[in-house]
Each structure stands twice: as structure tokens, then as C-alpha cells.
Image (cartoon, rainbow, N blue to C red):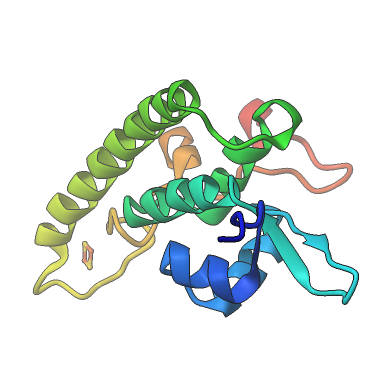
Length: 155
Ligand code: FES
């Protein structure tokens, strides 16, 4: 019996990982996984890419943006495959981010309760329409000066 190849073709990797070939190409284009080219110019993947794909799938399942997943994977020494310890660190960090996202979404949901039946979408009054308006605390009107103009706070 022949020994199994250390590398996988794109179809074999897709089948083993349970992802579409197009997804593999996409992940590769985004720098989440890497391949080498065979003599016949076909993509060949190290078996360790299966673990990277498992991490990517789990991270996507909990709603992590691809850019964050790529950043985390690329922060590993020499772009290596995550170990159990790496995964513990990543998942702990992502847990904190998920908790923050849940807190934000819960707040949005509660604010939405006030908007249901209102429909004003007012920049002044609606917390959903202008949720990030930090300058509103400084009063109404413009807060930035044009070149040569006196800043509003010194008027
Ligand atoms: S739609 Fe009126 S307060 Fe949000």
C-alpha cells in the first residue's frame, strides 16, 4: 500500500475540510491559507492546512470577520498552523470580542424597541440613526472649522 501523500490537492482538501473549492481559492486570495504549486502547476496544500480551515470555519461560525481571522492567523510565528495553545489564546480573545458585540447588539435591540412605531429616523433624536454622534454632547451645529475660521469652541 502506498504511503499517503504529505500534500493534498485542492479537491481532496475541499472534501476533507467540507468547504467548496471556491472557498479555498477565496481563503488563499485573502492570505488565510497557502499552497505550493506542483510540477504541473496545480495547487498542493500541506495537511496542516486542515487545522487552519477548522479554525477559520469555527471563527466564521461565531461571526468573526475574515479580516480578524486573517490577522490572528498571520500573527502566528512564521504563519504556522495554530496549535492547541494558539487556539486557546485566539478563542479567549475572540470571546471577549463576541461579548462586546453581544453587548452592542443588545443595546441596539433595546433602542430599536423605542423606534418601533416611531419612524422619524431623526438625526437629533433617533439613537439608531445617529448612534455614534459623540460630538452631539458638545451641542448642536457644526463642530469643525473651515480654514481661517475660528473654532466653534472659542466663539
Ligand atoms: S425612529 Fe424615531 S427615535 Fe428612532
